[in-house]
Length: 454
View: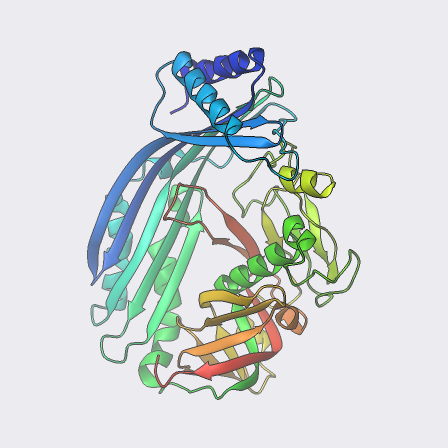
């Protein structure tokens, strides 16, 4: 973990590199991670790891070298030698077709506003107790699986461009529990997240399962015939849809290369429904904060979609250099703004004859990014709703549609928002989340296939 001795080692190594004319950045990354997996109604994996990485980048004209050191460093000399090794590596690399840019940190930053020591040191027995409470309350007639990742991330960054530094420490957790019927094979799922130890509770999942179990137990599955339907997307589905829509439409590199669905659009064009506004908002408390952009700028709230209009492009430092643009102070903190709909989606659709409720999209992917075409299937907890009443579960149904259609045919959006954890638990710990409304009602969603079962 970071301490004054380590901090001094890194800053001294930066100063020595600068004195030797080396353009370098040093990024320290420490994680304390714990992962529990559930399978067959019991703990199948209970593992912890504490890792330190040092990422070094060196720029020589149009050449760049990088290196990641896994493990602690013991002296300034050791780190300086690493930097010089990367300097030599950069000199032997191929030239780029643009001038790579060294991060210039705008100001000193020290923040741990989203750090909770209790979550950082959460005993695995607490997780086991939460899962056990869910199993006991809902019943042992089902098969349960799931995962719960938690821990802390501490980073410290400097570059030879100036004497400023950035230090950040935060905690996060990502919880999932899946209930599966052993014969009928349908599945229900519950997700939770947060930055504090008490943010995940058994009661939330118990209530979610209890509210929908009678429908799955007592009603036959409904096969959705291919066609266009009114669909209510839950927060998990909406988070993934909004993320893919924005990052393929508002990323500067994608737009410049004409690879995204906004390639033939200009800033100010109406591209989505006027009820849709999406921000890159580092101040949103439902998102893990990012104080400094890729280019070293203090992050600021930026509008990407403004009442349906294409409002902004986000440029990292090297994309900005390549295309002659100015780097933006973006944070990657996606926040879709709420609407005026009821907090309860059933109340919102009480006058609708038939609607599909799809809380999450399974294995979502993009067959054609330039046209904004995505595909994915319902799997967990999806139901058919008629006149505001849940009438039956639905078999696994595939959606294949375009972002512009989904976010262009919006009928209503929830007035409440929630946090959806989008972190990847297979690489280094790098907490990410999006803030989205709890549901969104969309017309004319294309269902292209439906299975004969769940």
